[in-house]
Length: 62
Image (cartoon, rainbow, N blue to C red; front, side, top):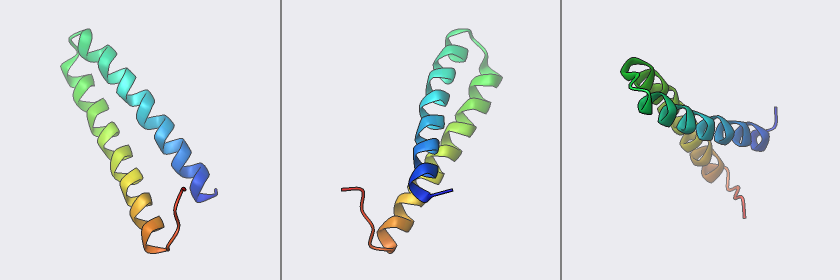
């Protein structure tokens, strides 16, 4: 998979997890909220890692 497509997918997943977290938190589901938070943080870390790798390789999105 192309790196830009992978990054797009990660951003989509991150956005969906943010919405899911809001829903389960509003329903008072503390364990699900925690688990979704962990998945959201993992997606965020992978996005940051991807940006760091692009910076090291001299690539930019602009």
